[in-house]
Image 1 (cartoon, rainbow, N blue to C red):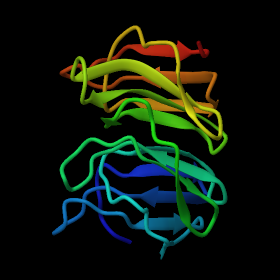
Image 2 (image 1 turned 180 degrees about the vertical axis):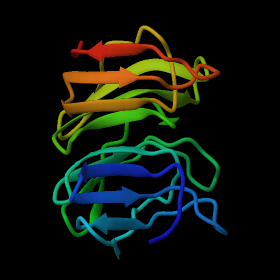
Image 3 (image 1 turned 135 degrees about the vertical axis):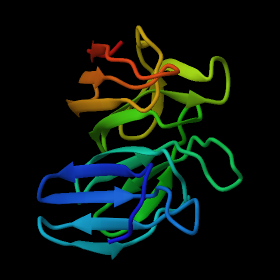
Image 4 (image 1 turned 45 degrees about the horizontal axis):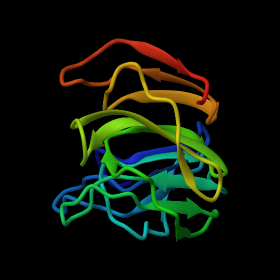
Length: 176
């Protein structure tokens, strides 16, 4: 319903969420919209309005993490979706935006991104176990704006991205 860029997406083809992102005229948005296979409808907003978040899960049990808020600060915030509202939980170890991320509410992974400390383009990976983040194995090639495909944090494909320009490398992530 609301045009946006840099939003987090999660769910399946006929049951999905789009949350956060950049809209006009406001650069930061916390709206969450749910897709039922044919139409979008607005549901509960994120706690932290942000762009460049990543997410995973389903329309009944999702997760959104990281991003950049209106300060503008790159953030570590992690929020869990229960099908009707967002709840703040333990933040990430490393603040990042435009990172890759996927998985489920109780098992997710964050890849690379634009980070606040160290190199601007990160190779660091974090894994979510349902209650806290831990350091995972590093990517071979640091990147941001990547695409990921996974159903579990310990079994993912990381494809493409930028470092600083477009890259075409693909990595298989199997955990630590």
